[in-house]
Image (cartoon, rainbow, N blue to C red; front, side):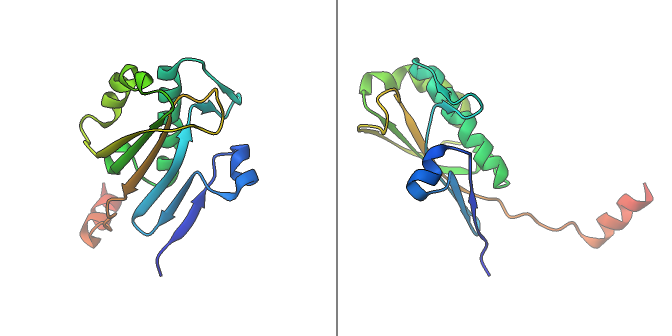
Length: 143
């Protein structure tokens, strides 16, 4: 049976709207649109680059809980109300996704709160976790 599991971040929106930060469905991990809210302090920066970096930290936490990393991301969507805010985020996005090179789309749209300047959504595919061969397990007990 395929595993299906919700991952919650603690965002009040998850309960109010009825969604999960991410859903693990077999090998796939679907991470909801994620904004730059720092859930530890429930604050959001006014700076779009700081928001993008916080989005990535929030996404990374969800991916880690799903036994994934950014290296497993196959698609990313960037949602911004102001296209001029996208380019300043490129260095942070390149640091995260430059080696991975997922398929990507940038869309201009309104976000749920006027303080939000960027929202990022990703899809990842978990690498198969292969069991260690019997002889490797036995060797590790003898070391």
